[in-house]
Image (cartoon, rainbow, N blue to C red; front, side, top):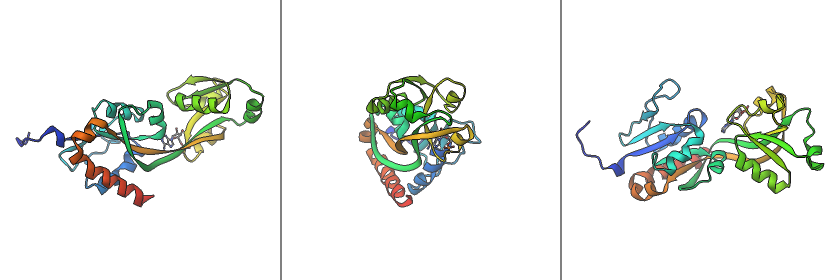
Length: 224
Ligand code: AMP
């Protein structure tokens, strides 16, 4: 304890997930003059200090970032469009597309499965995915009947062992699909990560948040 009184409105918590989002957010934080002083890949800590005594980073599952921000346990966070669509965006202000962690959401099938013919013939498809909302909307818009099977990871396995005819997953280089003898048959949408801000924090902590949001916006425009 430093003994110095710090009003709660100055303390900020940023929710990030490990991996690409964490790594791609570091340059944006640096543009705002904030350096994360611990590495989540080597530390087991879930609350990380930064060079700014008022700002801390919490490390959560990517799909939990919107929930922490929605309930105000984090003031702001970075989450992929894929995750935000599944969450629904309730209680979140989404001011900036950071243009980081870019990939696409696609439909993929086993190389031996004739997707086009199955769709044309009106077959009922079994689709395994973590992204059930997005998948449901995509196939409903196409008029394709699907049975959705919710998975939490390793979607690529499902068509290989007969759990599903197709998967809906995020694809970056496509090498994971290729390694598992799957082919991408349809792109649903482009994905990038966005900044999300708790709506109450935006009002109560505007003075501290605004310069960081402005720096993130400038840096994400310059970099891409
Ligand atoms: P790929 O580069 O296509 O082989 O991607 C490898 C795996 O990483 C895929 O199975 C995806 O689930 C995951 N992945 C790739 N890019 C992203 C991203 N931007 N956000 C979340 N997951 C991703």
